[in-house]
Length: 141
Image (cartoon, rainbow, N blue to C red; front, side):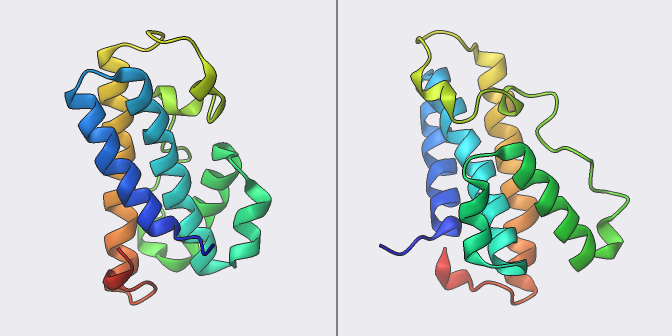
């Protein structure tokens, strides 16, 4: 089967937002982690290649580092605006994807809202820019 990180990122974001409204904090955070992972993989896929995405697996820290490095190269004007880590200060930085096996009720509403909001920010800062620059097609969404 063909992978589509851009579609997966959008789908996971939509579902995370629904779960947040339904007070399903654990799974909202779980899917928010995949929004970030898939969004960063879109950058790696577009700027390096698809095989490199597979090398990273679910390692958000490594993906984030490589993705932000690539964004700085593609969009030098963003250099001063891009933080070293987009997931710091949220639960996203910990236990991805292992959190899927944790006990229910581990995360609270505040953590879930912060995680989903940060995932949405990352997605909305990166994907539209790549579409506008012609690196990916809006039809891929």
